[in-house]
Amino acid sequence: MPQRWKHVLSRELDLLAAARNRFVRLLGGWWPVTRTRRRPPMAAQYKGRRYKGQRQQGLGPMRRRRPVRGPPGSIVSRTRRYLPGRVNTAAFLSSAVLHVIVFGWLLSIALPRPNKTAVREEFVLEVRLRLPPVESPRPAVPPPEPELETSPAMEVEGLTVESEEKERVDASPADVAPASEGVGQEALPEASVPRALKWVGLGGPPSLDPTEGVARLGNRSSGKAAALERYGGSIATENAVDKGLRWLAAHQDSNGSWDADGYTRRCRPHAHCAGTGLSEYDVGITGLSLLAFLGAGYGPAKNNPYRRHVNKGLSFLISRQDGAGAFGSEGSGYFYNHAIATFALSEAYAMTGRKDFRECVEAALRYSRASQQAAGGWDYGAETTGRNDLSISGWQIMAMRSAENAGLLLPGGMTEGTVRFLRSAFTPKGHGIYANSGLEAGRRGINMTAVGLLSYLYLGGLPTAEACRLAADRMLTKRAPDYRSTARWKETFQSYYYWYSASLGLFHLGGKRWEGWNYLLKKTLLPLQEKDGHVQGSWPPERSWIGQSGGRVYSTAINTLTLEVYYRYQPLYGAR
Image (cartoon, rainbow, N blue to C red; front, side, top):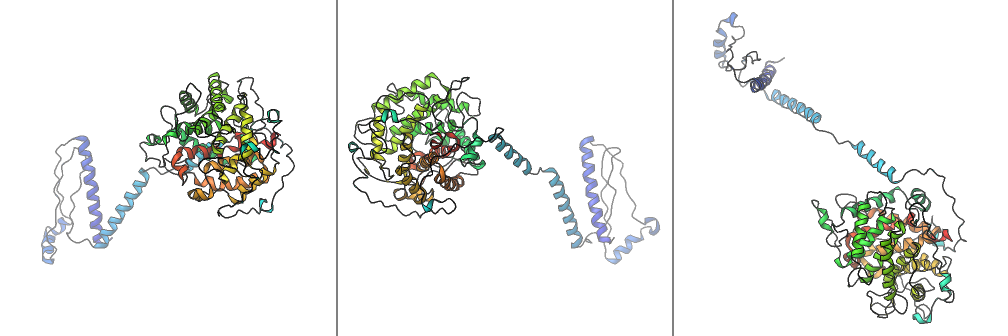
């Protein structure tokens, strides 16, 4: 070994020995040790002449280390002597690299490594818990109705969707008519309205469980996996539902409500989830969030991870009902809140059979009947204005359907008036009319087409009607789900409410139209869900006034409901 490398090695050994001596002193205290002095190498042979020779060669005197003190019996560093300034750069760099390698190796042992395998195993376990394997054989599909007439654009494999150019429809005198003229009477004869309105679908007539005394809705409890496979759902859609419910549960207020503008209080210590709404919609947003939990089978009377959240939310709704049966307070969205809250309590009663829920729903239905306009629809408020709004009436029809499905009787004349209103709001050509008077009277949009189709089916309309076929083709080919188009709402009328209503309506129709819409819906809705951070599981608000009104809580609740369509209800065409 070269002399310079030996010097480097000697210094390293001296450092290690000094460190060990200091550690021993810290453990054993300080005691004097015998001073040792080592004779220079070859001193017995040269007897000091080496020093003189070194001076003559210009090497300088040999350095001697000072004696060290340590505890008795400790290992004391030997006195080493070496020539100063004789270590070259290569030896120094080699020593530095050796230190870095040893330090890195020790650091890799000390620090724990992330276990990616464990994360994957936990995710797989979660999916299995949400979708257990079906032990019973797959139920036979009931024979469908005669195949609806389909246009060439409706073939699933060769499906074509037109661009987002604004739809122009030439209005004819037969399309828009006052409610008194009874446009579209060929769909629902007036004489047979009371007996012809048989509320089939959505689970059919309520079947009471002899052990619990509750009405079952769809496949929410048992058979969820089979319904997902049968109607186009997947593990991805169910995982999205689960993440959406987790986000909603984490942002529920302490009083049981979901606050449209104050939910960010539940984000601490994380960064706030952007996208607040308006506080006047708190009652409606709370009802919508409860519908998302109830739609997934998480009822208030069952042992589930969200039982406490559901009970607190239902208690909040009951506390906001006044003596007249109305929910919420007067505002621009007053009847939105009332209709959605009635809808949520109706489903809660259908799942539990509780008396207090029934009393609240019956009082709410009586108030809805008293607030019904003369033409059969509903306006934003309870005053008699003569204005009939299809958007608000659509939510009220859903609440009526849920109450009937729970076994409740509607107030007299309520159903007949609603059918009379829908004849003018949903034309024989499959167009939905937003309102009959007031601001934007007679406006047609694809969103109202979806609400009109769903309301028509809920009021007993036949899925083979020409209006259903035209409405479904128009939604699927001209206005497929597109999030970017929500920023141009006045042109495209794209919104989460439109996607929800269209999904329910086309699900009840079934067939190739539902398959095509379901494919486009999943392709658009699933990537929109937030994937990272505290905002994970929610959906961003729409890029319009609707997103500014409802905010992130509304967006998450209604999109979660949309992805529960596969098992939330039984399809109407299968129950007929």
